[in-house]
Length: 153
Image 1 (cartoon, one colour):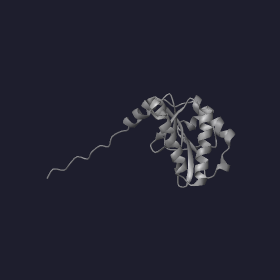
Image 2 (cartoon, helix red, strand yellow; image 1 turned 120 degrees about the horizontal axis):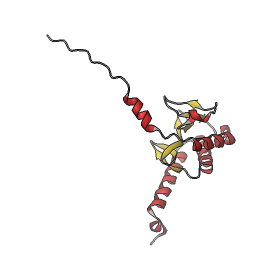
Image 3 (cartoon, helix red, strand yellow; image 1 turned 45 degrees about the vertical axis):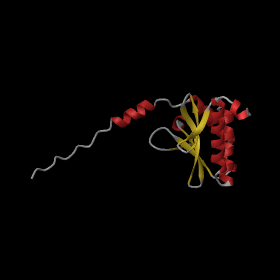
Image 4 (cartoon, one colour; image 1 turned 90 degrees about the vertical axis):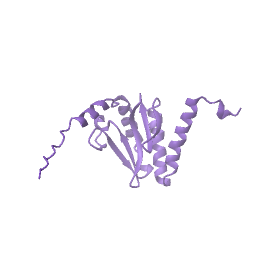
């Protein structure tokens, strides 16, 4: 029996997730791969309890099943997204979308302010957004358009 078959399903799944995140980084240009690897190192060092996986095509870290932080490549830049970023009180974070997300954007590893990123990660780990039901509920409360009455000939 080889060592791979001795692993528990959870260990094997974790190894597959790690490989997926590594593949995501190495599939980028060398500059962007270095940014991805630097961000991953900071995220995993600062949020050691977080579970990671490729989610919607990009690496994302979760606490208690809720997304906290992730990164993706957009237009030749690495976007570090905090799901509850607007609540972190960090002026460097730029709002994304209509809810609570905010991001930092990088093009090279020298732009990473590791102390600031760690500070934001600590805050993100303390302020996990969990009220997705309320967001879904808000979507359902939009007024529906009234249909125009059809003319009868």
